[in-house]
Amino acid sequence: MTLKSDDVRSIAHLARLHIEEEAVDHYVDDLSSILALVEQMNQVDSQGVEPLSNPLDATQRLRDDKVTEENQRDKFQQIAPDVAEGLYRVPRVIE
Amino acid sequence: MPMTVTEIRQGLASGQFSSVEITRDYLQRIAQHNPVLNCFISVTEDIALQQAEAADALLAQGNPGLLTGVPLAHKDLFCTDGVKTSCGSRMLDNFIAPYDATVVECIRDAGAVMLGKTNMDEFAMGSSNENSWYGSVANPWNTAYVPGGSSGGSAAAVAAGLAPAATGTDTGGSIRQPAALCGVTGIKPTYGRVSRYGMIAFGSSLDQGGPFARSAADCALLLQAMSGFDARDSTSSDTPVDDYSARLEQGIEGFKIGLPKEFFAEGLDSRLARVIETAIDELRKQGAEICDISLPNTALSIPTYYVVAMAECSSNLSRFDGVRFGHRCDEPVDLEDLYKRSRGEGFGAEVKRRILIGTYALSAGYYDAYYLKAQQLRRMIKNDFQTAFDSVDLILGPTTPEVAFKIGAKTDDPVSMYLQDIYTISLNLAGLPGLSLPVGFVDGLPVGMQLIGNYFDEARLLQVAHRYQQVSDWHLQTPEAYS
Image (cartoon, rainbow over all chains, first blue to last red; front, side, top):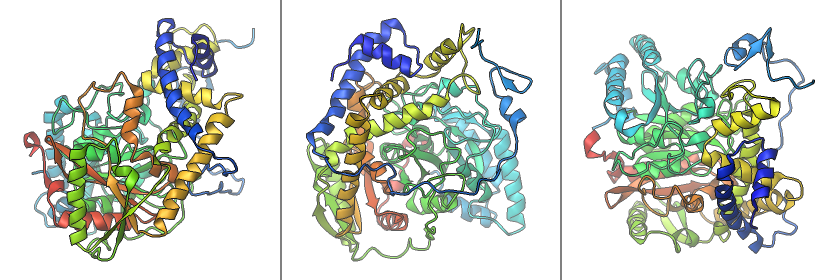
């Protein structure tokens, strides 16, 4: 699988990741060589093998739906880039 | 010569020195050597001396805990309340963690003193520690060489005696590989043994914390303090924790050790292979039975690992959006610009590569071909190990295909860097425990041997490593500049 520059631009958009225009070609090469490595997986027939998502085949533990955390909003917002009146500020979304 | 944790505990218990004294010694060594080695991102001198004073008070009462008064360092990936936790990234250069990781809490509850936070590859992505926003770490055995990664700062700090022990994390070899390249002992426990709460996530189904130290006996103490069930980690295991120190002195007679032929095949430096063979002979003399086994899907572990790890990384790192914490770009024009530029500026090249590949692998139309396929191969790799453990007690091989390489030697070729992980990553895919211990040198650089255990059989790995260290002194060697 060889990627094209437009593929890289569209993946970067999906990842909400800005990449410099002059670096796109470099990413095309790097990502294509990684994908070539990854495609070694196709040498093996894995039809019918059950996918493994947790190495111990464990399933998610459940707990009672009770509040267990205390509110630490003020502490957590001390490290936020921009807050006002307990809210996180971002550029205007709705015109 | 730098002391072991065991020696420090004895010295503290007998009153030979106080925790404040030994802590000051280490802080002084850090001040002297860190400018060259660059092992530490933050040195927490005030906290260390405060904790050391409290430890001395506890020691005076004659009721010390497992690690009371012992100084050590944390990889800068574990959240530490009120202390910068950068994960080696510009993204978190301004991040003061608002809570402690469970590992940090456990180690503090055991009485240890925190010297500081160690350097690492950005978000634990790398095998050389060259991907840190804070610069490369130098290998204490030869400062022109890499210490390995991603926990390179922790491994180098222990090797140079800037800390007697340190914590690390291992997603594809990030404890074992730097332990090997720096000539120290490190163990990655079974997935779920050590809590991941407060450990900044890279590949959540692969990540596991563990210790670095100068001996297996020291690792046993640290792992004891770190292990156990934690309700705050959804994949934490409630399997009872063994007493790791208790079994150390038992012999290894009759242990069946399997050598996977794929771990000794093409790609392994023959000089390194000879060093490993000498160590195997020693284990044979100690009564272990050695036999050949096969892990047929070993070569597939690299592509499989990189799909799983990159997919999980792209998902985990989506939380860094410039809104709630971490780096935010200047003057964003809209929300999309805020996300894109904050992330573009905050992340380094390797992290970006992995986010892009992971995003691609998980995108519509490609999921089955990449992620699902990788999860199927992951089960085949796990099954190989299961079959092997039907006939052997543990598996042994080299930790890495070659000794440390020069800083800059592989930076232009990400794929050749990934191949460094060939012997370590299959354990993360399978969730198995692995230990690396030093067994000799090639060209003046340390060689690591890897012991692989069955699930939750960490005690046996420590027992075998300890037995070897009773009859060898590779683990006691220190680079001349730091002895």
